[in-house]
Image 1 (cartoon, one colour):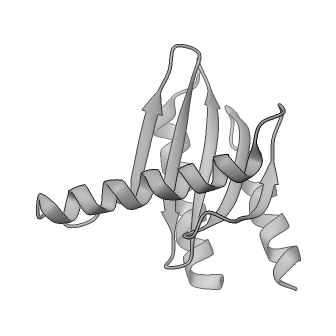
Image 2 (cartoon, rainbow, N blue to C red; image 1 turned 30 degrees about the vertical axis):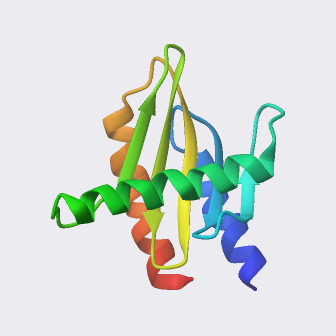
Length: 119
């Protein structure tokens, strides 16, 4: 049952216009579900995504900010969004270059909130 839920969430994230790859990752960095359109070192992708979000949360705490719910990394040809999805998971997505990253963020946030409620 959990596998089906995770798979359904991956399908929803992948369906967001502009998302070329995505993963649902535990806060410990273990990939629970994924869709990648290219070869990559999946364990490292999961581990580093979790590290990036944990680091952002630590910076937010030091700066006394309310909540660091996501991090966006922008490259010349794509962006990576790492977003918390409840207490146990996060979403990591690669977004194509000519995509409205703010729109993707908004759609991902709705899915992340649902993941936090269900899983």
